[in-house]
Length: 606
Ligand code: X8Z
Ligand code: ZN
Image (cartoon, rainbow, N blue to C red):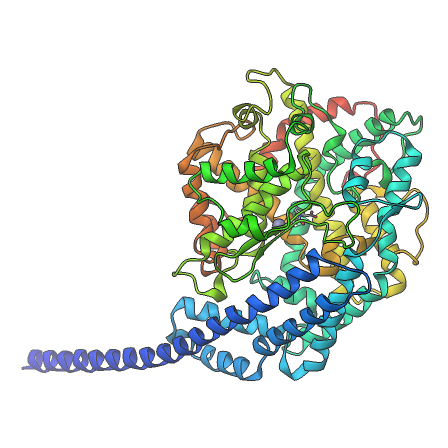
């Protein structure tokens, strides 16, 4: 008897459970349907408005004509429209309301709703006037930066001209002039930067972010402190090697320029890059001279070669419109306009309209950069598929977007790859340690710049409200501390050397993306080399390997619908870590210690 009562109770419970479950499922379905309706509409409008906004923005970057504000005015209007939509109170309220029931929604719905709120925070309707002012200030800043007429001895020069001087010129006077000329643009950007800092902070404070730095970092699902800790960790891990490189560079540069005194801090104009972020052209590896090999090619070959590489891995050819609509080469010297001289990749319509803005000339810098930009382009194309809603057509995180193209650029500069392309004769005997040194002067040297000088400056700027009369002082304090470099003479507050770096103006509070991307790219490269190619990570040839292509495409395809941490673990078996990068450069430590024996180290041991 008892048994049957129990049994009956069980049946009733089960029945009730079934009912409950069904009820719950119906309720969830109803909510999910309303969310789908909202998101379908949002995605469609977001895409439409972005097409107009991107087109307007594109024009302001490829054609900057002094005294002609047509493009700027049109751009401001288009950006305002986009801001009006993304920041609309109605959209914020809907997304917030739906997110209150997030346990009833699908993960991809939750991700999209969060993306709606994230985008809204940059443009809240409640702060419409502020947003409008910020948009105008941003357009003005970009025009000033890229409309600037760089001059040496009164003669206009391009940034490519300046870079060539810094890469090759041995005459110190000429180097200094080129470097100083490259910093003139900062003067006119200082007040704009201070204004933008305030406007950017105030807009995101509207939706509860402490400041713009915190806002940008939150895109990784991290707090400011977590990001700073991670950056410092990576910098610390690479520091012993950087310290050796710094010592090596001081002595080698002094030798190269015939300077008897080896300075404690490297004079900024001694270095082959305007910001000292890449010192690789300091070393030449006998037998591998990519720059001279590329002299026999033209600029178009460089970009086409990038495409051939991706196609060889199984990626599609670039859409015809890429070639028709991109702006890939420098403006002619006598052009009546200027263009943005920094490389970028554009996803115009969140679908197949992809473009790149570059100023490619046939040298190793642009060879690498072309691979980098095409990495963005193939990422765009990969996630533009029906499984990824428009709102999530972004990288798994921003660092992924930077990493994959940079990885292809690095792979395209390894010896077996270049032999395969006949960029160097097959069977060339080379000094492998020298090659590794050259690579370290690029990838390792970049870490203190990106984690330190750039990121700490922007953290000070946005989170600590750095006073405008300390911008330049702080910039050089950080450059000394992290990069071990210094200007040749005191640079007062009339300058704003930080603002000569593109990203400080138009990609604010995001430069750590690149630091993380370098760490990430070595992690992914390590996996590809060892587990797919079964080759030494120092000497790989990705070319034509469809397995490698498949692996990269699998990372790209889900875009931001993937959780970046899970994806990394799934794909490489580890969390984000500098281990692969450290392993890669480990053989250099002993070599450099020997080279540096008897030399004075001027960076602290730490
Ligand atoms: O800005 C870039 C890319 C933009 S898509 C060309 N990079 C950083 C820089 O130039 O400062 C690539 C690596 C570092
Ligand atoms: Zn990039």
